[in-house]
Each structure stands twice: as structure tokens, then as C-alpha cells.
Length: 93
Image (cartoon, rainbow, N blue to C red; front, side, top):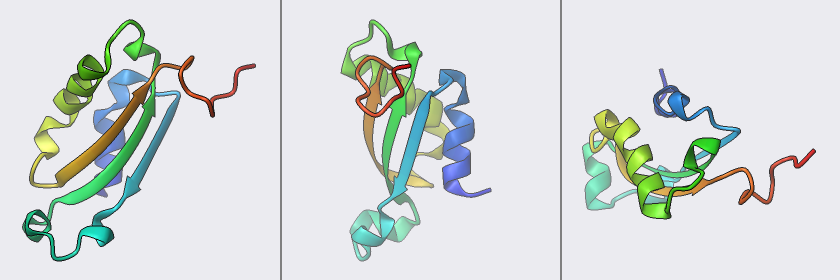
């Protein structure tokens, strides 16, 4: 199972309406943290589960779900956690 597949599986409790994962590890070759094998990822997640939460609470929720992957498989993670109303790319039917 790829690390992206593991991330998707771990974040499934959030019932994401949109989940974009970009592996930026290649941009960090030679970085001290990259030598451990952990990747650098950019994550955009849109979920109704974030409704009423501030950005810090949203990030904590994502980190809690991914905790078993950090730092061995995920060395660095950029998170954009949005509600459906905040997501400009979501279909607004």
C-alpha cells in the first residue's frame, strides 16, 4: 500500500468531499529529514467534519488520524483543511 493510500485510509473517518494529496518529496532530496525515508506531502481536505472548528482544531484532527505515519512515513505535511463552504473548487449544485 502506498503512503498516499495509507493517508486516504486514515482520513476516511472525516468523509472527505475532496482529498488531494501531492507528494513533494522529490523537492526535498538531500534534506536532513528526508534521509529517514519520510516524505513531504501537501494535503487539501474538504470535509463537513470541520464545520465550527478553527484551523488549529482542524489540523489537530488530521494529525491525530495520521499520527501512526509520522515521522517514519510522513516527515513534513502541509495541510489545508476546509469546510465545503470554504472550498472554492467544490461543486455548489
